[in-house]
Amino acid sequence: METLKNICHQFQIEKTILNIEVLASGHINDSYLVSCSNDVNYVLQKINSQIFTNLNNIILNKVIVSSHLKKAYLEIGSKYQIAGFIKSKKDTFFIEAYKGCWTLMEYISNSKTIERAKNEKQVYEAGKLFGNFISKTSNLETEQIIETLPKFHSVPFRFFQFEKALNYASTSRKKEAQELIDLVFDLKSEMFQLSELKEKNTFPIRVTHNDAKLSNILFDQDDNGLAVIDLDTVMPGIVHFDFGDSIRSICSNTVEDSENLEQTTINLNYFEAYCKGFASETSNLLTTKEIDFLPLSVKTLIYIMGLRFLTDYLNNDVYYKTAFETHNLVRAKNQMALLKSAIKNYEEIKVITYRNFNLKNIS
Image (cartoon, rainbow, N blue to C red; front, side, top):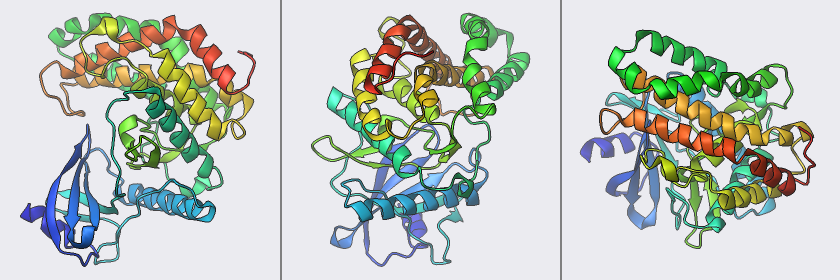
């Protein structure tokens, strides 16, 4: 705790630090709640500099987007909030210390995170808030936002990484993953479509969150959405990145490392709730072409995540934190089971999407 206190003291805070505790520990970064005197709290976050190598631009993106949203919310008196960043004593928004890169942010009081949705209201609120993020950043010039993780949601790039890992993988790991490997190749052609359309400038480039999962939203105590958090992956992108990843992570009937593959299916009631919330904020913004390809994004983003877990397993688990030897394989199997469910329910997914966006099926 003393080390964490020393880090906090390098930022421009005047309150006495009373306690520091783990706030969240995701696949990549670690976050801590810093409790101070007079009920002033902060969030201290250690950014994984091995994965996020372009730290200056990552922080710059986060500051630009959070400042833009804060101004937009204040102007209209929105109930939504955004955590601002605290400068260090050297007048920077991050410091490098104790083998890490650290940021300090405002803590939004009376808020909570939800790891897994318990009802349709939470899912609706998530859709509404992520839709609001897309809407309220639509007048922010994307040229201001730097692509810090090139090809992050590019299927061709992820497939290239997969094939490279496959070439060097151990015989035992390839044998364990053979069924998934075959499925990846079988679905390759369809899963490349969204990336190909993006390269042809079919869709507008927008400011996208790129990690639009439920735990990256703050709720109030009545399950109303309050704020989008964790802006490490904010970049220029297409709306399908956020929509598809939200459905992947929020609308599954199991957690992403569940081994109960029979239960790993798309919750269509949750999908309807998310679409309703998302459309309420974006239906007047998105183009017909964007809306028409939202269903494909559901399959594509699930495929990408399954492919990334599988690639890391073949690479002997060098990227994601794992709790046991086959953890990434279990995750990959889970995502591919979810993908099979999305494929099975694809017509219903399209009907629900078009209905909520008041669009006739034109695919």
